[in-house]
Image 1 (cartoon, rainbow, N blue to C red):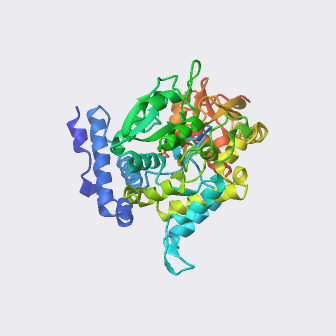
Image 2 (cartoon, rainbow, N blue to C red):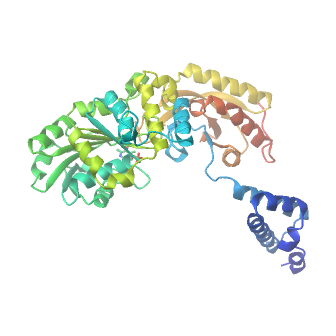
Image 3 (tube, rainbow, N blue to C red):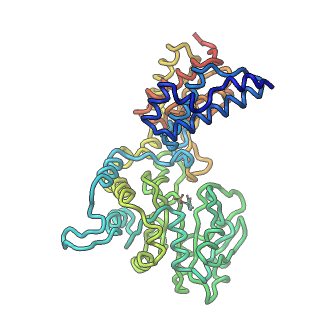
Length: 465
Ligand SMILES: *Cc1c(COP(=O)(O)O)cnc(C)c1O
C-alpha cells in the first residue's frame, strides 16, 4: 500500500485548473467535467491501491477528457451489423428505406395533417393514414397501427376477452423473447387462458370441446421462432375460423412477422402471410412493423371492420397508439409494396434477395483491401439467417470475409468498442464478416474499423502474403 503515491494525486480543484479541462467545462458544463475528474481520480486511487504508481498528470487529464466525452455522447448509437442476421432484435431489427427515412424526417420536422382532414377543414383521424394502404395490400376491411405487435395482441385480448375465456393450443403457448410469453400477456390483458391439446398435437375437436358461454375468442399464435417436428398436428386456421363463426366467436391470428412477400421465392421456407390468414377466415390478424415488413417498430392489426372499429374506440388504444413519425414511416414502407418495389427498396428484402455472386464480389473487394493492409483475410462460404423470430433453422447461403487473428474474441471485443461499433460472428476460430447485413454506405467505416483494431497492440497479424 503506497500512501505517498495516493498523496501525489491532485485534487479535483487542482485538475480543473488545467486549461484543456477548463475548455471542456466551458463546452460541456462544469458538472460533467467535475464528475469526470472524480471518476478518473477514483480509478487512479484504485490502481494505486492495487500496486501501480500514480499516473502521470497528462494521462490523468486524458482520462478525464475521455470520461467527459463519453458522458455527452449518446449511448444509443449506430452499429455495423456484420453478423448476417438480417432482423437482429438486439441491433434494432429492420434498417429503413431511404423513402421511409425521408418521410419520417419531413413529418418530424414540421406540422402535418396527422388528425386534420384537409378536404373538410376539420378534425380527422390519425388512423386513416396507413389504413387505406394496408387494406389494399392485404384485402382486409380495416386496419389499425399500434406501438408493436405485443401491444396489438394485448389490445385484442383486452378488448375482446377481458374477464372471458380465450382458447389457445398448448403447442402455441410460446415465448417470443424479451419476456413476451403468450400466457403472461393473456394474464395481463385480463383474459383467462384456456389451454387445449398437447405440446405436439392439437385438433379442432380439442377447441370445440373447450368452448363454453364464457368463451369469446379462439387464438392461433404462429410459432415464429421454433419448429416442432415429428408426430405433430395443429388445427388449421380455416378450421378455427369455421368453429369460431359457428359459435359466434372471434378467430384471431397472431402472425409475428407478417411477410407481405412470399419468402419461398427466395429459397426460404414459406412464412405465413397476413393476406393468407384473412383469406382463411381470421377476423383479426396482428403482425410486427419491424420484422419482415421492414419498417419502423409498430404493430399492425388487420381484419373485419366491426372488430377493428371496436378496437379503435377501446380506451387502451390511446395508450398504445403510435406517434406521427412512426406512422409516416409505416406508410412510406407500405407504399413500396404497393408500388411493387419492396424487394429493391426495403433493406430487409434487398438483403434477403442479395445473391451469393453479389455477396462474393463485395467480400472479395474487402479481402483485397485488407490484404493490402497485410491482414490474413479470405472469402469463405457461410450462412446468413433472417432472424427476428422468423423462419427458424432456415439459412441463406452467403460469401463472407474471414479474418485470422491471434485472439478472435479479443478482436471482436475491440471491434465492438470501435466508433461505429462493429458486431461480428466468430466461426472456427476466425472473425467472420457477412456482407449481407452490411449496408453499402457502411463499408468504408467497417474496413477502416478492422484496420484500426488490427493495428492495436496485441494484434500482431499473421500475414498470409
Ligand atoms: C415477434 C412476435 C411478437 C411480438 O412482436 P413485437 O413487434 O416484437 O412486439 C408477438 N407474437 C409473435 C408470434 C411474434 O413472432
